[in-house]
Amino acid sequence: MASYECSACGYVYDPAVGDPDNGIPAGTAFADLPDDWTCPMCGLGKDVFSEVQ
Image (cartoon, one colour):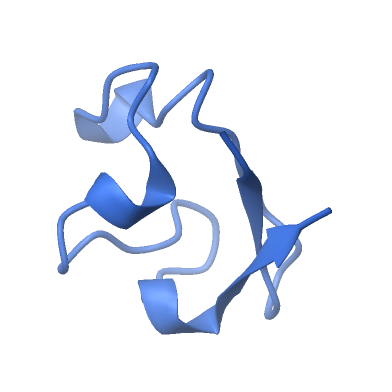
């Protein structure tokens, strides 16, 4: 699964890790994150993330 980076702060969402502090278990693909999920570092939405190659 691809990782995604926040263009505002550089936080990288890694599906292998998830976002356990916010209730997102490991193995959750970026596309499967809830629509209201926000970057845990800066609080911006999924729309500012882009896939990391």
